[in-house]
Image (cartoon, rainbow, N blue to C red; front, side, top):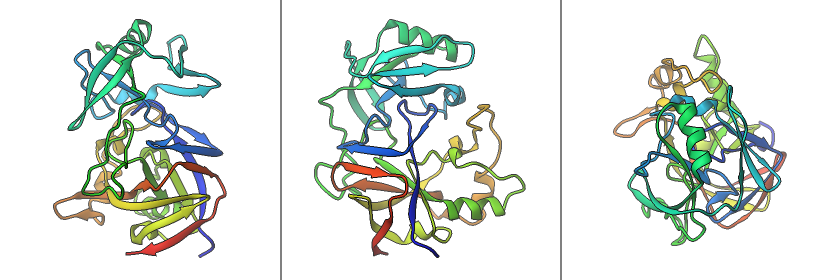
Length: 269
């Protein structure tokens, strides 16, 4: 195979909403800057994802200068200043409790109208530190934003190509919502890596990504099917873990990456 290359960078400003592709990405302590920086929650602060509300996939956030612009069919664009504070509220995401800024009544009404259920939008508080599970963290200060558990998700194009070869209808990469996509490697090569360098950044591959029902949600229509979980279960099902596809990464320090950066494998399993 040729030299592994970073072929795509994807950013998801609002957890479980649409993503955008970047040519260059900057990482802060939590991961890609502004990745899963916002979260849709119930009035009580419980987090919502496409597991609960598939229509979140139809919401398209876009970073524009100093503003987050949010669009969806049939809705007027919503504009939110990137540094907007607001009333503090405690929100829950899995087993974690986090401090967040309520992004205002206009945003709450916008999301409630579109999802047809009462919700609000929050931004992770600037001083909030949400630690990575110590079982998988590599450093005491490893942290994450509102992603499920880890700052980055990496998948190779080869892995998706192999999966698609096993199905009657191929699926796009957006079903798996990775941050980093790598070309030039054999299928599932990433499963054997333990540390890589991409551009100026060092990443530890700490845990396979166990896949959920979100992967069965068409990211354009929000309709659900049986694939890819049905096919993945035939050859990617780990006992007592679940169906896996992709690798969760933790970065050693803030830094910058860009599409076309070589991916240097430092250590293998």
